[in-house]
Image (cartoon, rainbow, N blue to C red; front, side, top):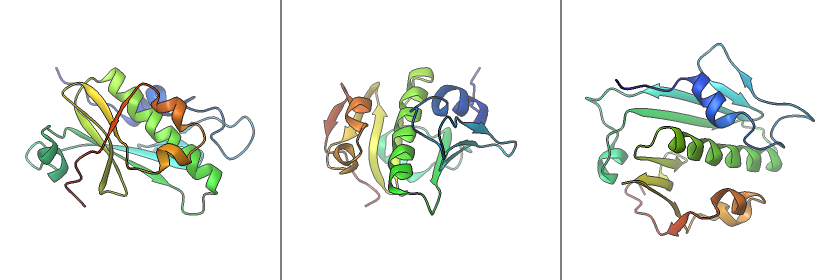
Length: 155
């Protein structure tokens, strides 16, 4: 039996507590919406179960079946600090998701650049993506992950 994660799963497994600094103010934690998405500060995450008949080109080109997509959206007017926190929370959420649902997948930045992927069990990050070094707590998040130039079939 296949289990598809919900927005609640994203909140419980990935976004809640991913980084203590996330949020709009001191002490703010995640909030779960009744609209099918998880929210943490300036970041929204919306899961969507994919139709097996309509595969995304990226999944096919990387060699996996796309069963679930999650859209991570950053608020337009987010500060630089909120942006960094949202990106960190996104990476932590995806890594936590891979821990709980061990299957293949990829994280795209701006719908085109593969910045992280898991194919055949190993999580690999794209070493050419600048934010790995620009965001203050990113080194801690990616510590121990293999970094190499990843294929960019959408660029």
